[in-house]
Length: 110
Length: 339
Image 1: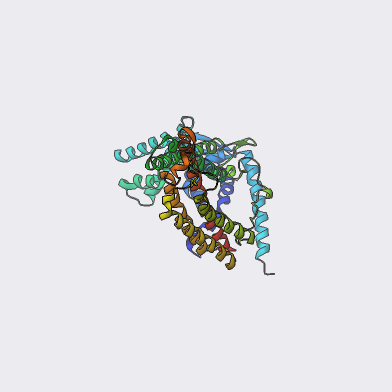
Image 2: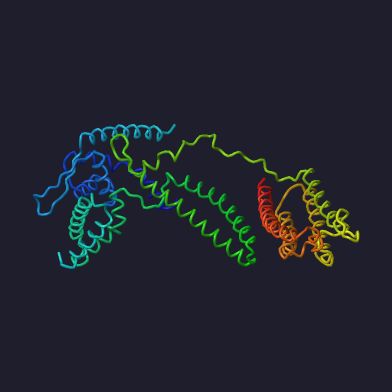
């Protein structure tokens, strides 16, 4: 198996986790780069080219709310998980736990 | 921040803004401006030199048009997976129906108009090519517009992502098993009736060539028979056609005895078919095939005019039939090989 195919499969698994992790982290307001670092520190690997457009999409879908903070020297867009976003996070978490249980069961030697 | 670096960022944001619709431009540009500034700070903290840091960050961001597409969830393809199959099937169907009709129609029209062979071939080629380009272009344009118009649909109070849109069912009715193609029973074996029919037709043709020379139905004033075909052709073409027809019969019988079509039979059939058609069509097109004395029987030169129009239509249809027969032979050989 080539390393490229391994990488591709890993990305498939990780893809959905970024949304969930972002929704959970943004229960406390945060801006793009702070979230990128927080995700990295939390062990969720994500590319900036994925995260920034993702934040925009989640906002358009109503799962995040945003506000420009102009009190600093540089204006930054702060995102926060909305009620709908909380609900989505809960749904995703439930599904994640269910999948985790299912994969654990599969992993057990029969 | 140096003046040069600031210029690079401004130029990048300017290029980005041009790729974003006016309604969203300010929002997207502001977001990317924040992202660039934060990325530069992070890169400097990583130890990247001040002079090159902006260039490094912008290079990482990549093509502004591509970045805009990512932010706007806009497709970077002409026709997405939702419409691709419908587009491809429709295009193939259109080309298969329209192009042969156009080519045949143009050939007949130009030939009746009295154009030379070269003019006809050139006209058919250029008009058929133009038609193909137009068909492909307009069909593709319609689907590209459709693809963009149907994206970002609002379903359940929110906008669908590109991926979700792609997963929607194809144009029209959803696919069902009824759409599965029927497996054609491969006619890889030549039936006995088929061989007899083909051989009989060959024999009838040879008989016709000989019989028309002693045409019992048409007599001139002196009571001598008027052959339908130019008698001078007995010096080469007519005996040649008889031999080729006999070879064709032999090949058919050979294929039947062998049991199935294969590449050799297809190639042999193609060679014989072309060996027959090319000289015959050539003489037919020059008008030397038919006996001039035969045409004199018709009053007021109507025979010549009649021969001209009929000759054109028959010649082109003849060429079309031979071309289709060749394709069919190779298709059968292909199926016979697979079977």
